Image 1 (cartoon, one colour):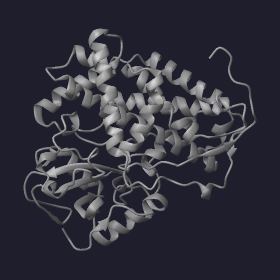
Image 2: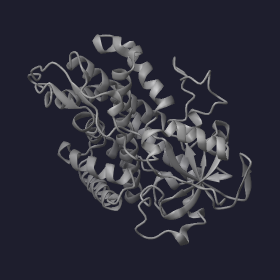
Image 3: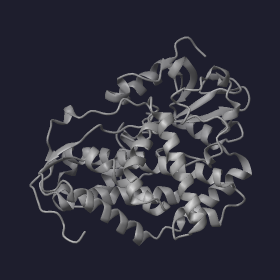
Amino acid sequence: MTPDAVPLSGPEFQTEPARLYRRMRSEHGAVTPVLLDGGIPAWLVLGYRELHQVTGDPVLFSRDSDLWNQWENIPDDWPLLPMIGHKQPSILYTVGERHRERAAMISGALEGVDPAELRRHSERFADELIDAVCAEGEADLIGDYAMLLPVRVLARLYGVSDEEGPALVTALNDMIDGRERAIAGQAHLATAMAELLAARRERPADDVASRLLADNHGFTDQEIAEDLMVMMAAGHQPTADWIGNSLRLMLTDERFAASLFGGRNSVAEAMNEVLWEDTPTQNVAGRWATRDTRLGGRRIRAGDLLLLGLQGANSDPQVRTHGSALTGGNNAHFSFGHGEHRCPFPAQEIAEVIARTGIEVVLDRLPDIDLAVPADALTRRPSPWLRGLTELPVRFTATPALKGG
């Protein structure tokens, strides 16, 4: 690793990530040496073409974390262990034919979700959350809404009780951000998924967990529990941030002002622009080189960790049009990944329905909504992995809650 490696931390990930990625690309090129917590070296792939190469070649750039040449330097309490697992039996670290079987099993379970039912659940939970704040005339659309909606919908689809939702929100947030409580959050989520599978073994139902158990392709309950954890984590926080980032854009950019007063065409445009310019999943770990190679002018050694710089690749000037967002339905962004380890298409569709429904319910239920603070006072979580607001304070005309749910 080069001596000029960039720490993958600091306030710029919170305040000016676009400028930070531009500087990284200018000073280091499409593949930047970085340092993770504890000074652990890795490579951040910022180039669009380079990222396409890494995610499209699972033979050279494997998802098998056992290949990592840094394991001997990783302490047991390393905060990123929930994100970069060692010998974890989940789909994230399964490779080859077994991964393809596992991906098909998960896609099949998610495809079983009825679109109309998904929309109903999304609307019902969104309305319940708005009911809790609509009479106040003010709310935080992050803490009071976006951070609660996806997990409530996903919990219902997967088979988890509604009462477990708030605890799952806390566990997922602790685990995903790699904070001090990451290990505790992972433990809580693991227990919840194991209890869910045990219950569905005895009483199958029309839910994702039951479908996974019924069509398990020989995978163990532990492996299925790991996959449920991955699906819950990957489905909740990024979708919550997608809602929050899209609402922020619509409340601060005059191009979307009409949508706040009855128009709906711009909701999809705002959501797509966020995936290009302000994607919830900024960076992902990762891939491991199976042999010595070269990438973006860098010498990559066998066992080196490569982090997928999704936002950096989305903003690569070599693939951008006049430096502006590629909106208008262009979905060539990396926000859902690429290659055989990308987010399954049914999962993408579920996330989009939850996010779009959540945004539309806000616009329907809260008349004359407006920011309660200046736009430049909005702050982000200081995370290099997931980009989202810490809060989104709004004011609006108070209205009564819906009757009859």
